[in-house]
Amino acid sequence: MLTLDERLSAVVKELELGDKVADIGCDHGKIANSAVQITKNPVYAVDISAECLMKARTLSKELLQEDDVICLVGDGLNPVKDKDVDTIVIAGMGAHEIVKILSDSDKRYEKYILVPHQHADVLRAFLQENGFFVKKDGVVKSGNKFYPVIVAEGIGYTRYTPFETYFGKDETEDLAEFIGMRKKVLKMLASRAKGESLRKILAETREIEEYENQRNNR
Image 1 (tube, one colour):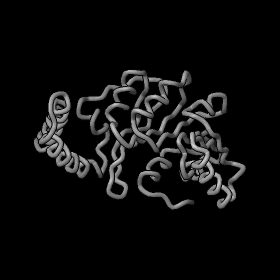
Image 2 (cartoon, helix red, strand yellow):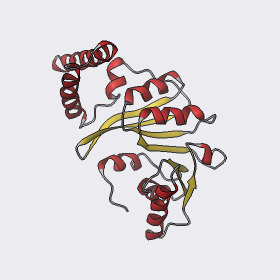
Image 3 (cartoon, helix red, strand yellow):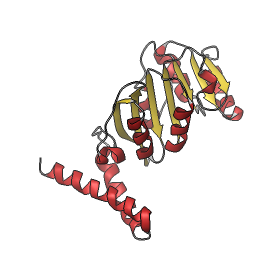
Image 4 (cartoon, one colour):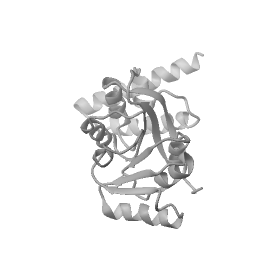
């Protein structure tokens, strides 16, 4: 098995034997190559950059998996729309890009593993408004950064509370540290924000305060 950081480990942990995976925005190909070993199926590694795909292809050759990691150049889910795929991994881009990819696809898949690097609240709102069922949604610390790992099904219904929209549904072991870090960031941003930006910062701050009050009263 490959050595993976906490972020990538959290992604591949959600894969199962028999899953038919497409890794969208695969970059170095670590997820795709790990997925081959876990699922025992060929995996599609998709990236808009031929240069990034070369890294994934090189890694698959080093692991003697070049026949099982199928590299496709293309945008979003288009390269796999006619392939035998039931699990979509998107773990290397911001929420706005992920939302665009999901919006541009006219097909729903059984399982999505999504890791937005920024603006996770935007992705959560999209999933809630567009008929996805969120099974898991928690934050993972990897290095000095925090990443939401969202596991969803293509058909269903999800309702997020305002707090969950910012921080996810699951109380992971890294959540408290993430909230503490986020409070410091919001305080710094509030000192120079105005108008709508300030309103959003204050709204998120209030959700944190309410959550902490509820925890203290348990």
